[in-house]
Length: 282
Image 1 (cartoon, one colour):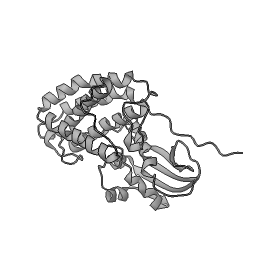
Image 2 (cartoon, rainbow, N blue to C red):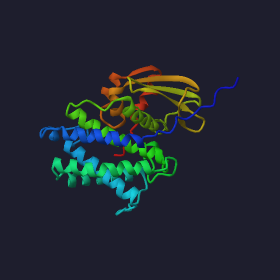
Image 3 (cartoon, one colour):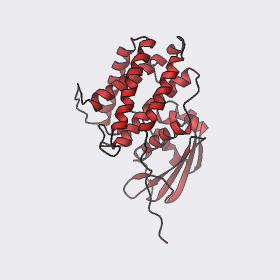
Image 4 (cartoon, one colour):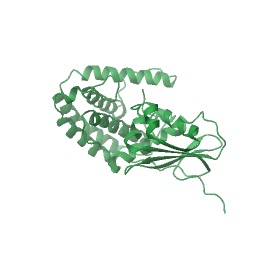
């Protein structure tokens, strides 16, 4: 009997989750005290208010650029470093401007913009080409479902930063969190691109907890591939608690602290490149 053909993971459908996630964000922000808005977050140099301003800024930018086709700037992007510098500048400018607004005004503007974002992502053909490629997965051109899932992870993890900073319960239900993990795992082949191993080598990645799951990173003859089921010879297995998994992919925890909470089996050196996987731009 021949070996089963390796199969890629299924596309991630997240457009239907935006209304629930946005409603939770507004409910969260409206529950904050004046002191809560000033608390530091995992985002370097950003307070809770800064993160809320960033969520508004990126929402308005997406609607303007992707939905309305309005692009005031057309920078020359010749490398990933150029892209990171451009996005970091836009983010800093957005927070600087919108950070001048009061919390009440920020919430009112988010309340006005969020339904437009939800309607926009719901209107997209999931399999048509997206306005932007998912750069952290090494893609210059992506399908809408992937870019929408990427945007979902952005809004989920920034909301989670606010929840962590203000000691509010996290939005870590399986319905809301598993798609984030599933999307983040698409960064693994790009993170492992320079790791040399024989074709057929398999790395199994587990996220423990109710919202977790298992993913398989397989070395094909031409490149690393993420698979939905095991194929090849397992050389390493990594298990990550769900509480820190999102922080690894968003630069929200240092590698030493993460390693102390992870479990490595088999070739630990082959499991550690996972810590290089970044699923954000910047």
